[in-house]
Amino acid sequence: MKAVDKVRALAENENYRKKLAVCYQCGVCTGGCPVAYVKPEYNPRRMLEAIILGQYDEILSSDLVWLCTSCHSCLERCPQRIEVSELLIELRNLAAESGNIPSLLLERAKRIAETGQSTPISRASVVWREKLNLAPISPANVEEIQRILQATNFPGWTERARNQTNGRRS
Amino acid sequence: MGEEARYAWFPGCWVSNRMPYIEAADRRLLETFGIELVEMKGTSCCPEPYAVLGLGRDAWLGLAGRNLSIAEEMKHDILTPCPGCYNTLKTANATLRNNPTQRQRANRLLSKIGREFKEEIGVEHTVNVLYNKIGLEKIAGAIKYPLSGLRVAVHYGCHLLKPSRVTGIDDPERPMVLDQLVEVTGAASVPYVRKTLCCGGPISSVDEKTSYAIAREKLLKVKQAGADCLIVACPACMIQYDTNQRSVEKMFSETYDVPVLYHTELLSLAMGITMDEIGFLHQVKVDKVLERIHAPKA
Image (cartoon, rainbow over all chains, first blue to last red; front, side, top):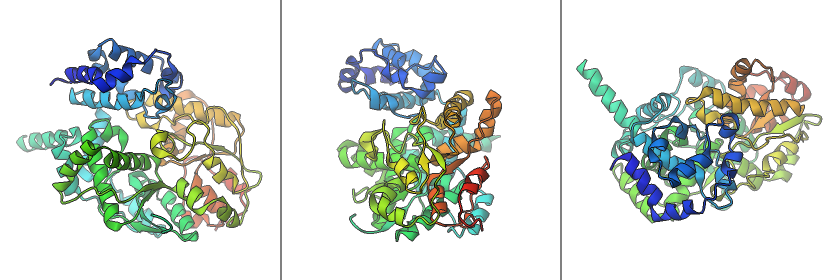
């Protein structure tokens, strides 16, 4: 199933349809949104409207879906108890599946697939920890982590595997 | 897990690697109150919500479930100083406990590496343990150098509080726990506008300008309130407000000069733990704050 069909399936899923049907477009989500406050073209209310109206392509192909900070203000404040920020995570998963992933995020995902950590252990931190009498960082068990990432088709893993294959060919 | 004062310590990637001074402060502090932190072996990134949860929910739940299973083997609740890790591990723990379908999916993944989620432990943040387990009274009794006269702007950040159905720490709109943990040192928590605003950090790698514009809003309000410093409870907020503050100033051609401290650094100093023991390294100078503290400067 294509990502756009999946958004349709998500929006038309009984559970979500019930949730979205009660949105009366009051805009509390947008009013409390830290991103919308400084960047008006980011508008969670408008995103909900687009889903309700079936404009799925617009959501998936846009960079805007990646601008949510997951502060969850909208989730806490929605008078209709729509979990907007959680819905946006679902949409980011579908955008990722359709190939819409910001490049720096993909880099971080690859790093996690490579080392198991979001920040690789640096030499500076090793010295610093020693000075503070802190035990050395226990390295992640990369083999176990990669098996999970591989089994779930995690983009950071598949991208890393693709790069390795290309690297060997050239 | 009742009265046991021993936790599986999960500092997270950023604290252990980029901000070990937070770990040093927490360790000294918690040891003083008889809490033992046991190292976890072979853990991964919690994993973080932006680059992992945003890209694939199954991978996120699988890795979080794996980290939880390591603590289950140790038979200790997890304690973390990072609200990001707290939020991820607590959310994953609740999902795996309450959603049989998700649990089955995650356990199918975990069985590939000989692991299983068994629903045996809980997840705590340092703020929780200080406030609820140790308690304000005991902390007040340990203050050696009261920080009277110090005016502090308290910043809660998002993931310590929200979604409140998961974190359960405090009221997400009118939180008080961190203010109380600051005021027990003798410092005053000053009122200011936009107290529960997000730091904007998570989107800095996608849209730096928007991310910094959100940070700017907070830094301006803290400056307007005349606070001596900003107190945070999150390493990501620390990076955004301290490490990135000069870049934000440059982007908007403004000067904020707001010193930023992690909440346990402030508490440690008030308890007489020396700067040498914590060894912190901040981008924005904290001298003005230290001058007001009569602790030995080592």
